[in-house]
Amino acid sequence: LKKMFQRHQRDARALQHGAVLGAGIMGGGIAYASALRGTPVLLKDVVQSQLDLGASEARKQLTKQVKAGRLAQEKSDHILSTITPQLDYANFRTVDVVIEAVVENIHVKRSVLLEVEKAVRDDVVIASNTSSLRIDDLAAVMERPENFVGMHFFNPVPVMALVEVIKGSRTSNSTVSTAVGYVLAMGKTPIVVKDCPGFLVNRILTPYVNGFLKLVADGADFLQVDRVMEQFGWPMGPAYLQDVVGMDTGSHVSDMISAGYPQRMTPLVNNAVKLMVQHGRLGQKAGKGFYQYE
Ligand code: CAA
Ligand code: NAD
Image (tube, rainbow, N blue to C red; front, side, top):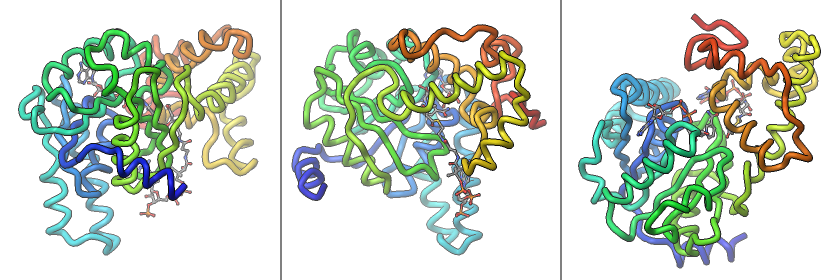
């Protein structure tokens, strides 16, 4: 491991400023994790209320650190000031790494990636936080695929240590090393994985969630399943986990992984998650999902 990290350190490009695209559940958390460990970030979204949410989440996390006596108020104020919420690409030429965390939709992601390539310098590393899309499928439209890599964080970002770094077939070693360096700078644990639908963790997690959805379609009570899995020793049951992840994201991830491994993941009939997407029950971010939060 030590040798691996030394090699990445040698190959990594300098990293002083970052940027995050999308200020939702993940983008807000990634921006906070970056700023907390000393890398200032531009945080771009297309919706002002999402930028406000991203900033208020960071403020909430910092206030918790101050109250716990782990951070001085002055330091907390400074960290918050290093997250710059914005609706445009102003100052993107000053950043060294961009992490895209917009909705899990290949068309939206491709158009955002094309846009950001035009806004940054040629040597900038662009990473996607996609949960399930192949890096090569996203890179297909890009002008500089050698600078493109997957950086898959887990939810909730402030707590979860693991980050999958995904090397596409055209990703350069220096790009992988820069992504690994950024993950380490955030105090998190990188694992470099190959490019495939769902990478490593979601190829394990998604069949588990689908198994749960099949039980629900067969008439199981989701509350009982959640209680059972908690008693089994897991921190939360699959219904609550779907509320945390977001129904729209969960649904896209499941579709992508099912399409990638049709023999291993048979299609879901009477899929409760799809039904909830139709009814706007997107989970905690919408105030309602399997559970009610309002
Ligand atoms: N946001 C920020 N901080 C949180 C948090 C949250 N949602 N939940 C807990 N914390 C913090 C607590 O405030 C506490 O902080 P302090 O130590 O500073 O007080 C700390 O984490 C520990 O909290 P708890 O003791 O209450 O909780 P825990 O340690 O027992 O468990 C957890 C916390 C690890 C997040 C646990 O709830 C867990 O494992 N949840 C499941 C998470 C999971 O499976 N994530 C993957 C989702 S799928 C995904 O991300 C991939 C994808 O592509 C869709
Ligand atoms: P979210 O719905 O909470 O946030 C998505 C954000 O993207 C919104 O704020 C939206 O306004 C913004 N957005 C949409 N189009 C945009 C554009 N053109 N430019 C800038 N911003 C734009 O979603 P999320 O849960 O944060 O997921 C974001 C990405 O992270 C997805 O690829 C998802 O698969 C991945 N991911 C999600 C989780 C999770 O548990 N939710 C975990 C790991 C990875």
